[in-house]
Length: 292
Image (cartoon, rainbow, N blue to C red; front, top):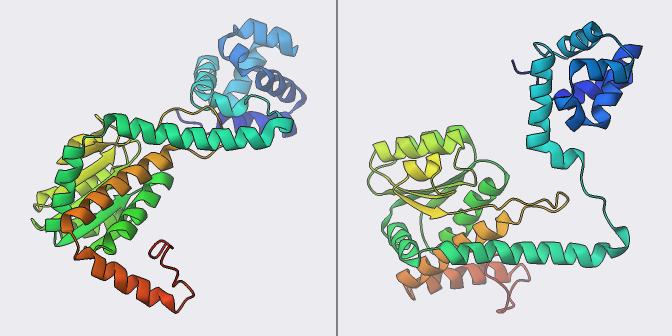
């Protein structure tokens, strides 16, 4: 049985429940690990209530009974325990700590890519992009959606016909009009995004080539023709955005640069035109990135 966020339900009971409910909720929230393992008799004794009261309390929270309640508490600890009990922050060391955390995380993320990337595969992907007449980039979720948009941003300026889609229905619809001249970039950190996996399957059905940037051995990696490893390592620094973004940008830049060099000097004309078009916006400095 699914009861949603049981921690939130406990907090509501601690604030608005009966006297017994408040007592039980406060004791459980104070030590979720203990409550997930303690016998019902111990919980009842600590709260000063009867064992039947504990059972009724668990059912009032939407659980089937005490056993189900403990199981859900154990899930809370396994999935989100770090967020409930974060390590205390050291305020007087904040500036240096933040600088180191972000910088070290970005460096480590890119190094992981460098350690496992196969440039022969990147070169093959670049050839697919150059030969494609229709390219789509799919991403679902925070980092992966950013990646789809960034892939579009990197490749359109090379003269390639690419569109990024972050909406699941648009992914499916665009996949349905693919053919053997189409190429799909499918991006998912987990490799379990249903809309992306299903859209890749649809596109392949109509002959499109498909490249997954995703976790190795994931469902998406298995669905695509080619997979490039995109791994977001566990990170216990909860206040810091994931460093996995840098890994994804690194992979996209590898594809973009390899593709640009494969096309050759003809890409420079498009870049020159972009530079000229932006010169009227006070962006004429030749040292600035093109359109960034």
